[in-house]
Length: 292
Ligand SMILES: Cc1ncc(C[n+]2csc(CCOP(=O)(O)OP(=O)(O)O)c2C)c(N)n1
Ligand code: SF4
Image (cartoon, rainbow, N blue to C red):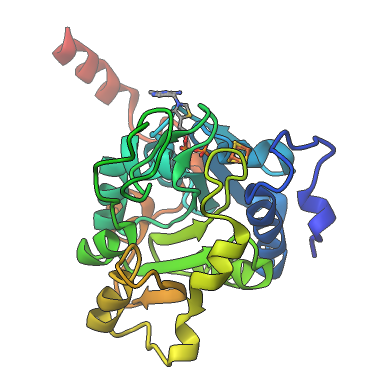
């Protein structure tokens, strides 16, 4: 059985000291071990951003795509080889701004991707522009007078669009985050884990101390994740007026088949394992003639 060492390599992260990405990185490695996976059974897909460097610092197959296209790439990979555990990991800019359409389509499909969004409420890699989850009034290089837009609510959006697994973790609580990741890996279909992540360089107002004062565990409030109406109410707590940030599994429904369970072409097994030319050559010649 694999250990954390098997998922580690010798590349030193370039993240700022104190960045929340360290906690998420450690939780992911821990969770892959706890889920009983071997490195070759996992594909980690990213976009562009500080957090998208995560697979560079791991011993796993990885795909690094364009900014905002993480879920599109992960979807293509999952369809090509659905026997792999596909983990998408990217920032809130990548996932909720440029990638927002892919986010909604992945939810609608219920495709078997675990989507970890490193939500630091800012564009870190490009040095501090405001993001779709930045709080109103957030002062940044692109909002010197304070952000005018209201922040988006990815959890409420996900639940409203039919997501079947919606959770929130905190980068400092590695033990809980790794448990959420294991639950997401075992989920049937698309699983969203929005992770509260500190950016010590460009979002100092949301410090570790600030988060500690605001987070609470939904399990302590006896929340039942199967209750969709209650889940939606909890999702609306953050961002919200009272400042409470719910953590844990907020919504879960294991009754909906995943996309890969329903695509007829995948029922004979992973496409990647099937012979490339399973149809007679004449079919291809006819197709090429039609195209010309
Ligand atoms: C198509 C495209 N648009 C914009 C960029 C510039 N860009 C690179 S990373 C980034 C945002 C990074 O923020 P986020 O996704 O939240 O990740 P973080 O760096 O905070 O982890 C942007 C706008 C790009 N690389 N490609
Ligand atoms: S800029 Fe922010 S998100 Fe990027 S490595 Fe530094 S602390 Fe982390």
